[in-house]
Image (cartoon, rainbow, N blue to C red):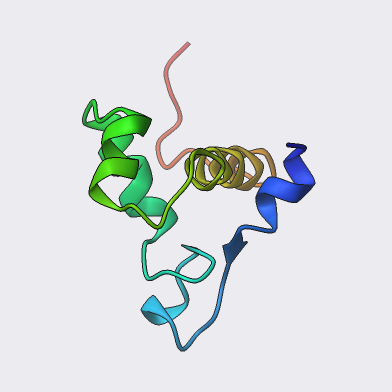
Length: 82
């Protein structure tokens, strides 16, 4: 599945989870899924725990995070010594 198609699985609605990006049709936030992955959960385990999800939903969260970071400007709070 292409990145654009995966991104269509993520939605932002101020009435759902206070506007956090979620997997379409669920109340599962991208942040929640990323946190599961960061804590060593496997895609298979997440799908077993949330059977309404499919692998592409998890991949969509990763693509969304990647796109978000790509389009973010980072400003250092404290300049590092060189």
